[in-house]
Length: 107
DNA sequence: GCGTTGACCCAAA
DNA sequence: ATTTGGGCCAACG
Image 1: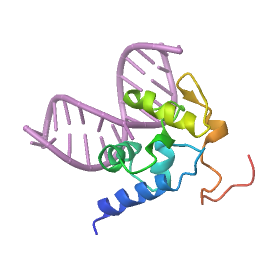
Image 2 (image 1 turned 90 degrees about the vertical axis):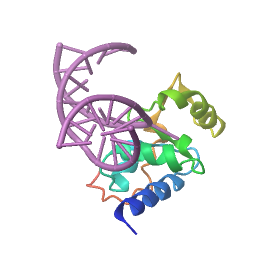
Image 3 (image 1 turned 30 degrees about the vertical axis):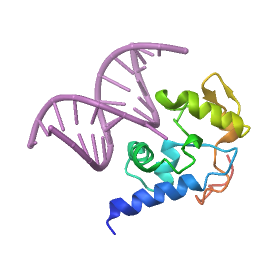
Image 4 (image 1 turned 180 degrees about the horizontal axis):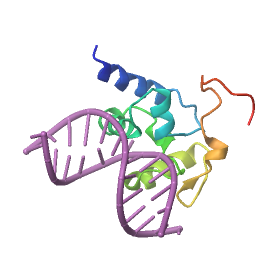
């Protein structure tokens, strides 16, 4: 297995792990999977994201990617994730609960 | 090796 | 809030 393929799988796994009603940013996934860059996450989704809950992946500011905005927002709305216009409340829905990162105290 | 093109991110103006 | 510019990584011609 090449490193590239493992990364590809890790990214997919991470996205599969996003619980319903929660969302994550490309940057978060990239960080969790140790991806070299968030762009790679986008590429993976573009190529092999058809069977993944890609609609739970948003950009850093809480807005979905331009071309998917309509579909993505519709799906999220169906899961109970309401958005103001195109922006989703990351503070509310961001997937940070089950992240295995060490928590430096609080705040 | 170089220029282009992305489901990106951030800081500054 | 929007635009601009820089950084980022991989794939393609």
